[in-house]
Image 1 (cartoon, rainbow over the protein chains, first blue to last red):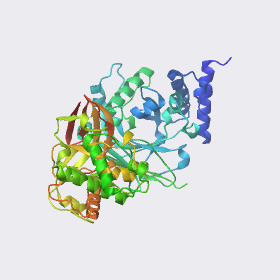
Image 2: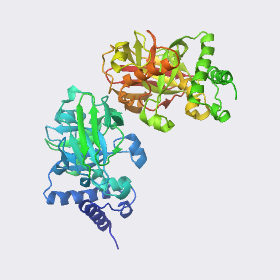
Image 3: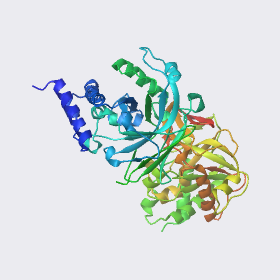
Image 4: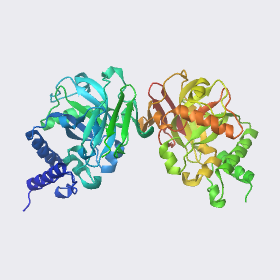
Length: 264
Length: 256
């Protein structure tokens, strides 16, 4: 008889193999019980441990499913999270190899960089604001190890929240220097807007997403640390990326950031 | 073919009495966009005859998404009259509309004429002030369904507008975040960048398209640059508010 533990291990193996081979796998939700988010996070945790054992350095978290539209689409009422490792950070101007992310898409986000640990059991919005050292514009390159992005909530949670790579802008701003809720966002490709939005598209306010993450990380025993990067969630719809594409995202008050994809 | 005047009478009566009609192209499949602008001009003459005055123009289909949706590669325009202007913070009577929707927009107020091919710099030099705005769009066609000639004939769905506070013309407006809120809850989130990448491009297009119709944008004219987000339906009792980064807000309450 297959136990839940076996199913979780099997799902983790499938996703790990897909990430190593570059060949996407079938959805893993069929291995888990409907609505069992804990099991999906257990799958993610197995591969997080594998990554850490392999020497990858944990440098932050990403928050996903922060838009009402996407939550409705997946039938959930809360965001999800994934791990950011040092090898996922791409320097601005560096070409992104298409082989580095499976089925890449791009999203513009606000990244918060922490100056303090957030490990208290009872965190408040003020704690989070106090802990943020600065914010920068970011482009997240999301990817899915699941073939054709055929994902439901359990698949994306198990698959490290469909994380890929990310690029940070280089104009750090403190919280008082821009409006995280009302800042306009436009991401362009070849001079055409491919995604437009504003801060409030992320859970009403990206700081709300950051607080949710910080509390959740304390609860699951991987609290956020000083120096960690938080990708707080998309400010507009995601856009598909193709060979040679160059995206520029501008967030009003927070500067701009570019992500360029290699031609092959 | 049915005369353009007959079709103009039909769309104007629909707007005037707030009754939905069938699409003109159902009956006249060969209707061109050029015909449609002629119908719009004729229908507006009926409004002027009733005492309304033209005080500006509105631009439509200014987002790439909407152009693709309707299958066109040019923006459209319609005329604004003083009768369409609603007071900020006041009420809108639902009974005066067929199925009204609200869109957040940027409004330009001109201090100098603009006509024909102008540069963005020339266009901005003619601007006296800019303001946040809500446009009330209300297609007179059943189920808000129409083809390109239908919507142009129907004054590009324009039916009302509300202006907020005027700001200096050098206020940056290229990427202002916008929330459209119904009863205090965000129903649309966007940026002024959705308006052709920059709202001034819409003003440039307005000067060109209005000139093509033999008219000009005049000092004192108001130009609504086009929706920055999808439109949201209005219902009785709703308070609709658009909040703009750096420009404050503009709102209206819907009554019966």
